Length: 70
Image (cartoon, rainbow, N blue to C red; front, side):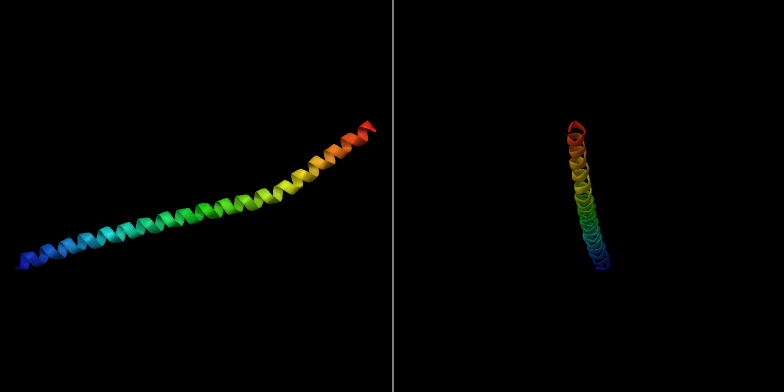
């Protein structure tokens, strides 16, 4: 009877450990996903800040080329 109790206790401990590790892995995966989304958002923000500067320089270069030819 005591051995049955120990067997059930060990089995429950193994199941509990499995679910704990699975939950921990799921949280880690979700954390990595959120960090990746954050990095992508930061990249999009930086990209949107760079594009107006690039556009201004391009237009400025075109205007200067027209001025040289005139």
